[in-house]
Structure formats: C-alpha cells, structure tokens
Image (tube, rainbow, N blue to C red):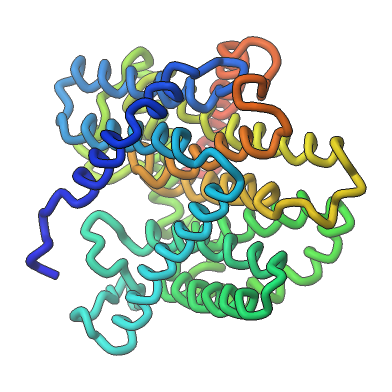
Length: 403
C-alpha cells in the first residue's frame, strides 16, 4: 500500500500505549532487580551502552532511536501483560500476526498479487517478506519458526477440536512458507525449538521418540539448500564464518565501547550475520555480555519456572499450562536464529525477551516482587557467560574459517 509507506504507524501506536499506561511502565522500569529481573537489568544496560557507544563513535542516531523503541516495547509488555490469560493472548496474537505475513508471502509467491517477491540466488529461488524492505528470507523464516512452535504447542494442548485443527493448518502453511524462504538458519532454529519442547515436556524419554520422528519432519520441510552442509566450507556459510572472525577482530581492537551501533556494515561492507558477535563488535565487552546475558537469563529463568511448577504439585501435571513449556522453547529457538541474523536492535528480539520475563512472573507461583530468578552475583554470571561465548566462537572460527 504505497499510500501508507513512510507513515510512523509503530511510533504512534506505541506512544499512545505508553501514554495510557505510563504508571505501570515506570513501575516496571523502577522495579528492575539484578536477582529478580536479570533480563531487565541487561536490557537497561544495553540502552546505556548503545547510547554511549553511539555518541562516542558518532554513529547514526537512527540506530539509537530504533533500540529505544525496542526498550519501550520490552517494558510495556512487562507492564501490561500481567496475567497468564494476557500472556496467552499475546503469544497467540503474535503467532497469528506472523502467520499473516507468511500467508501473504505464499500467496504472492504463487499468484504474484504483490508483484512477486521471489529472488533468484545462485539458481535457487527464495521467497522474501512482502513489503519487508529491511527483511530478507532468513529474517522472515526466523519469525515463522516462532509462529510454528506456538501453533504446534497450542494444537497439542487445546481441548477444542476446531482450534486444534486451525492451529495445525496455520502451522502447515507457516512451514511451507519457511520452505519457500529456503533458510538454513530457520531449520536449525526449528530443530532447536522442537528438541527443547520435547525435552521440557517429556524429558529424556521424549527425546528418544523425538530422535525417531524428527528426521521424518526434517525430510518433509528441508530443501536441498537447507541441508547443504558444504556451504560451511565454500558457500555462504563460510563467508559468514569469515564475518564472525572479522567481528572478533573488531571487538579485540575496540573492547571498551566497540565501533558503534550499526557500524559493522560500514567497516566490513556486509552485515555480521551473528547478533551476539555484532553486540561485542559494536558495543564492546560490556555491551556484548549484556546481550548474551539477556538471552541466557531468559532461557535459564524460563527453565526454572518449569522446575518450580513441577515441584509445587506433581499431581497437577495434566493441568500444566502449556505456555510454561512454550516460552523457553521460543526463546531457545530464537536464540539459535540470532547466531546467523542481525537482530541486535530489533523490536522482535525484545518482545521474545519480555515474554520470558512475564512468564517468570506468571508461573513461578509467587508475586513478581518476590521472584528470585538467579542466585549469586549478576556481574560474575555475565562475565563467565560472555567469556565462554567468546572462547567458543574463537575456537569455531579458528577451526572453520578458510581465508
């Protein structure tokens, strides 16, 4: 719709929402605690680091502004999604919204109703996001994976036959859209999400059955490009590993404040294709540690919620809220996507993080102000996680990169 191009729809919507709920918003910002809301601590720290690094390096104010939107969205979700019912509505609504994008992409691919979005890359046809100027096939597929996991988990636990088959239909269409995107990263994210869900839900016994069924599902969804492991040596996989190595070099050269938000493309000519390494390169060690830590604490706190709910009443397992399993599944799958994408400043990244924090409040069995997510020093945990990630990535680059 050309008439809508350039209109600040998101800004207007989120500012109106902020104005109507400023009290709850400020409460969530001020209630941030290292022990109880470590993800929020990391998100607040990232806002400071993005601002300082941007000012110190003369980066574009647009990147700082984009992250500020994501920061506002994160705390608005915490302020307004304050019950299991609202969390369920938000999660399902997010999946349906993503499904809408996938459906438009599928229709455009087969009918050309929006002018055709497929792109020929080396003889391989890949669909793109309709109207997504800042999105390519990989970005679209990452969000579609989130939708698929929500639909599958909802279908598995729904008592309504109509809703169950509707979710299965939506999941099949979304899987087909992922197939059209032809993204290797989406396949890795999908497998990560499925394995996480099966393990959380059924434990090691479930993994045994999953090991038998997963190859069948992968064979149904995966294309030749998705399963082409030779790309690590000679194709796009190798070029991205080289970008990772460059990001490590830039980080070591600028360990304090990095090279500035959004500046990796200016230094390299291409994007980093790894949100975690992008954080270290552009924001320095502290910024990288905060971003890696945010995802780590989101997964760890969501997993802890599962353990708390199980310990409270093992006999109530049949009434277990499915979102208890779904939220850590989404976080794990999306984190896998971030290993190959550039979503450091994207609002969708902080939507996923906010859902994890909300789930901690809703399902821990205690009020938000009483919930303790981590034990021990937050700074020490961040340091260990960040150093471990850097060391592991360095080893991978040394082994796999071929200049």
